[in-house]
Image (cartoon, rainbow, N blue to C red; front, side, top):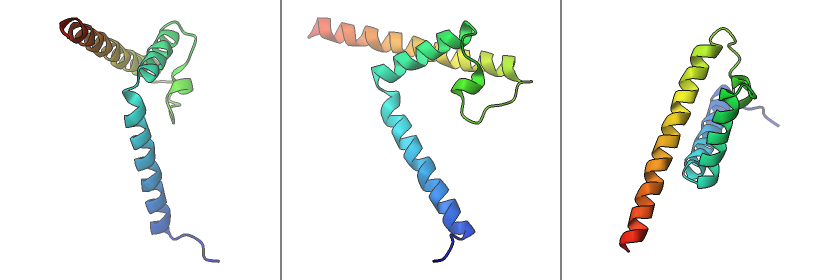
Length: 96
C-alpha cells in the first residue's frame, strides 16, 4: 500500500475546502443559520463567548479586541441585511 504524495495531500485538502465552502454557501442563506450567527454575536458582545470558541484556527489573544470588533461589525452587517431582506419579503407579500 502506497502512502499519499505531497500533491495527493494538497489535492485532498483542496477538495475538503471546496466542500466546506459549498456547505457554508448553502447554509449561509438559511434563516436558521442567520439567527445562529446573530445569537453568537450577542454572546460574543456580552462576553459569554470568546473569539476562539467561534472562529476556527483563531488563537491570537493579543489581537483579541480588534478582531472581536471586526467580527461584531460583520455580524451587525448581517443583521442589517437580514432586516432589509425581511422588509422586502413583507412588501412583496402585501403587494401580491
